[in-house]
Length: 83
Image 1 (cartoon, one colour):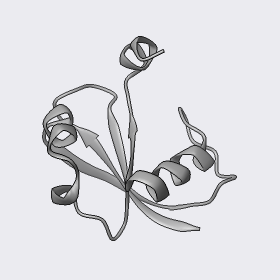
Image 2 (tube, helix red, strand yellow):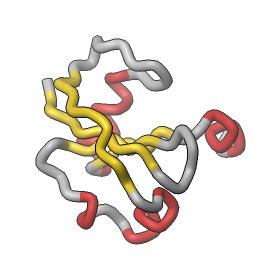
Image 3 (cartoon, helix red, strand yellow):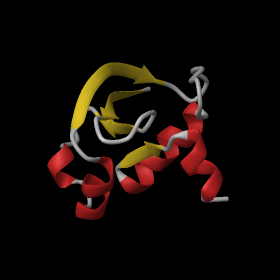
Image 4 (cartoon, one colour):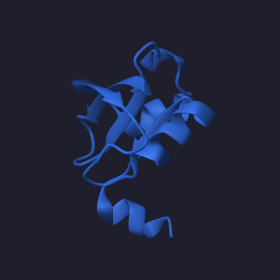
């Protein structure tokens, strides 16, 4: 189980950032902060690999937080462009 903060982008609709509860937005790469824009914290979660999330696998979110320090949930139209 990992404590996670979820932020929504005030710049792009349906873009969310999952960050370890101890992490700071200021520590994220500058390019990511620029892409994401202003952030609004929307919730705190206790995330486990088997938890149900709307658009992502909780296990994938946890893996990305462990590897990169964050998980970026892109809006569906942007996510399709990355494929």
